Image: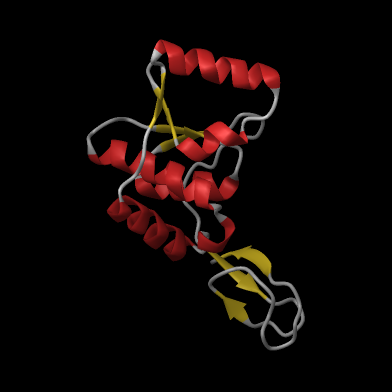
Length: 143
């Protein structure tokens, strides 16, 4: 097995004891590498996420992990992003990574999304509340 890369924020997010122990063993053995993406890599991830309509759905940690994946892709590594988060998978695919779900099937290709107000039909590029009528927007695949 190759090495796994993660962001420092993930270390504090691991809560259950068995996962924490596995992470600590991986770190000690040099199989898990904690990395930091550059500002340019974070900007590229944000640009790609915005183009797909996913930017508002990614956490700061998601963006940082995708930045690390992008930095490895730029260096010529074959990268597999393991996540059940569809937004993370979508952006990872667009960046050039392969994706693998843990409990859910993986996306096969990137998808572009828009956000539609179910009340007035207004279309937006990021999720939120419709400024026209105050109703929560729904995520829809762009045709």
